[in-house]
Image 1 (tube, rainbow, N blue to C red):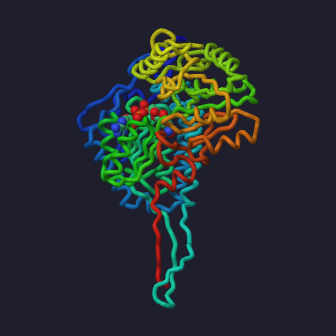
Image 2 (image 1 turned 30 degrees about the horizontal axis):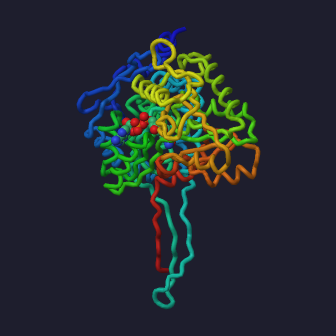
Image 3 (image 1 turned 135 degrees about the horizontal axis):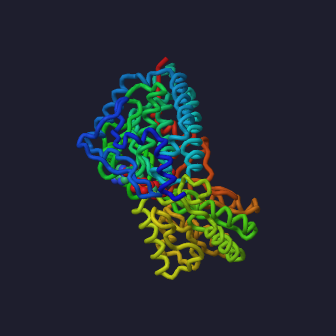
Amino acid sequence: MKPREWSAARMAGVGFLSRRRHGNFIDGRECAPSHDAHLPVVDPATEMTIAQAPDSAAADVDLAVQAAQRAFEGKAWSGMRPAERERLLGRLSLLIEEHADELSALETLQSGKLNGLARAIDVGAGAEFVRYMAGWATKLEGQTLPNSIAAAPGSSWFTYTQREPVGVVGAIVPWNFPLAIALWKVAPALAAGCTVVLKPSEETPLTALRLAELAMEAGFPPGVLNVVCGRGATAGAALAAHAGLGRVSFTGSTPAGRAVGHAAVERMTRFTLELGGKSPMLVLADADPDEAAAGAAIGIFFHQGQVCTASSRILVHRSLVRRVTERLGQAASSLKIGSGFDPQAQLGPLVSKRHLERVLGYVEGAKEEGATVVAGGARALEGGCFMQPTVFADVRAEMRVVREEVFGPVAVVMPFDSEEEAVSMANDSPYGLAASVWSRDLSAVHRLVPRLKAGTVWVNAHNMLDSNLPFGGVKGSGMGRELGRAAVESCTELKSVCMSV
Ligand code: NAD
């Protein structure tokens, strides 16, 4: 079957798509955008338009924030018994799983990702994360603290802290894991008693809209979860700058994150930024080169390299570099490229034509600067936004393909001679999202982990996340943490109480 046939077959089975032209989801119902303007949602495997979603203006964002404020202040959600919030979040997680076929088909159609990946991550891990966060609703606690207040003689004081929801959380998400990353922001906010305005990427708005409908079906009060679609420069910027937010949680590129951070600081709105990466994978001299090459292939080609933590810089001890490069090149050349619905496909299309051209620009630039193409280096298939998995050798530290986030299936392999050099190469980046170390030498691993400037370090693995493990970056990769306790606590303010007793 050709990509077009795979897509047509799946579209026919997704009732949500029969509506074609979607509205925002505000205050518990679908709501047409104020200027009746829409943007096409395009299937990158076929380049066919599959739906239209709102191109919202600031007025639409304002409506959504007002609805979320009413829902928050009305106490229907923030005043609800935590156990009841936990129950509703649990119900939402089950509904996500019950709609796995539909949600994963929507993800593959709008982003091109492999359907198995959409099922496992956006839907499967996403639903599991909602359940994990549901449990936090009943466990947010303060502390009773001893004090040494010396006011009047004989006075006595009782001091404690309590956590209170920050109010409305504005959640701005990218297109690479549209449902999963939306849930990373929505679930902790709701567990903490906040209400939410979610702004999905203009490329991939469909699962966010469907999620809001499922939340209503689960029994969430209107206005608790609102979705406003549109472009970053308009709807996204209006949300980040809105005075009605208690917190803004952003995932996306570093330049857009910087703009969101500036807007938030202007209003003194709390913020979390999860940004780009250029994550190194360090293969030490004692590592098994074949295992490391297989790990590198997964690290960089998983989801076409459109992963913020992708192992885009493979740093290998000189004694192993030839073997690892050869094996990684062979792995790249053997991957089957095809529609995300093709069960044999191991690599789907990139998210859009615009993004494909951007990635190809980096590849051509690297060739012009003298890098050696070990594998790939061009578009793949006819029609659709497909790209060959690409491996470069003979690169230099100052090349753009080494320094900048490509966000595609493009790896560079670079040799090092000593542990010291490996650390300095790994940290020579404006980013600091993640890194991995491949070695069985425990002492070397323990020496390296604290020296790597990264929010996460994996050992003999790459790209592993867990609901309970905080995730986020240092340097240009962002501020704050998602997942785990850190995520739900970030949606609260810590209030200190000091009582004369
Ligand atoms: P992007 O920055 O273009 O867009 C992300 C979201 O922000 C979209 O919803 C977009 O509409 C919105 N946006 C864009 N400009 C904005 C502005 N000025 N104000 C407010 N909102 C704005 O990123 P993308 O292309 O959708 O996603 C890819 C990027 O996301 C990569 O850099 C990747 O590394 C990063 N990412 C990071 C993580 C992480 O957890 N660190 C996870 C996934 C993706």
